[in-house]
Length: 152
Image (cartoon, one colour):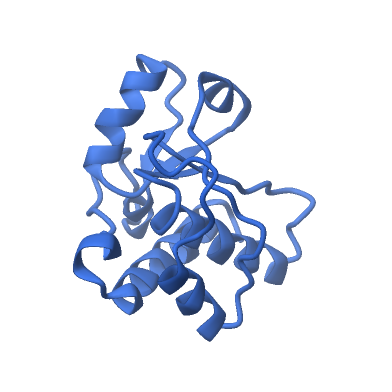
């Protein structure tokens, strides 16, 4: 489960980039990918158009996405919860209380050979800087590293 603040930019970009990588690795039957938000403000909204455009430029489809909020059931049902930045970690803990099962990671944790949970850099937020290409590259690097971590 990929998580960001509103589930309209970074986490859906990560969801669809990862789904693309999973499909290319012929691992669709083994790895299930979704995304969600820590906030409620964008619930029901589609992916932000510039984020969808950036994915489309790279041949990645993102139709049908609707923002939703992360729940405690998500924590219980997913093996990994991968957030985009430190702010998301803090907000996620307001929902789950504690990471008692050690499931919470930051996406860029996986760029290290020996990842340490929630120690990696933040994925920059294109909502504020408008550079969706930069964010795409950061997320792609993180997803590729995550795939390597998962053995693909």
